[in-house]
Image 1: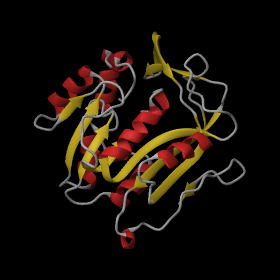
Image 2 (image 1 turned 180 degrees about the vertical axis):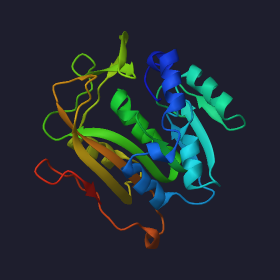
Image 3 (image 1 turned 60 degrees about the horizontal axis):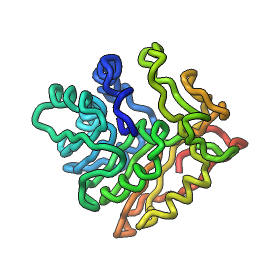
Image 4 (image 1 turned 90 degrees about the vertical axis):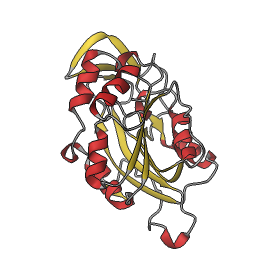
Length: 249
C-alpha cells in the first residue's frame, strides 16, 4: 500500500490479509474489470503503486499474460512477502509519494486503495500521471457537499483486518471534494485526453470516523493519447446525488 507511514501495513495481520486477498479475478470490482478489459493490451508495461504483497499480479496476468510488471510499496515487510511469492519480478520500496522512474516509463500505472488513506493523495496522483505513457487507473473517494477532508484529527480510518482493530493504528480518511479533484486534474502537465469513470454513492466504512457519512466511490481511468483516432469515446463528468447511483462515461 502507498501510505505516508509503513507501520500499519507491516504488521503480521496486514501481511496475512494482503497475501490472501485480491489474488484472483473473482475479487476484482466490476468497475476495475470494465476498465482493464478496455485498456489492457499485449506486452503492456505496468506499474502497480501500493502493491502490498503483490497478489494483483495474478489478476493482471489473467487478463493479459504477456504484460511486464513492476511493483512499488512503502512497506519493506510487504515487499519481502511479495518477493517470496513472485521471485524474479521487480519489486521496489519507496518512501512517500515520489517514484524513482523517468517520465512516461510505463504503458499503464495502476493505483488501488491508496488515495483515500494518504494525505499525499495529490502527489500520488501527479506522480502516477507523470510516469505513465498511456493510462493511469486509480480509485478515489469524493464528495460534493463539504470541503476536502484530509486532516486525520477530523477524518480517519481504523486499520482493522478481518474487522479486528488493534486500537493502535489510524490513518487519514481522505474524502476529496469534487472541485479539488477537478482542479488537480487541470493542473497536470498534459490534460487527460481519455477519461473513464465508474462510481456509486456508498456509506463510509464502519471503521471510518468522519463528518461525511456517504462518499462517492470512484474508479477512474485517465489517458494520454497522441493519435486522436485512437481516443476511446467518452467525456469526464461528475454525477450529483440526485442522479442514479451508477455511471459509465
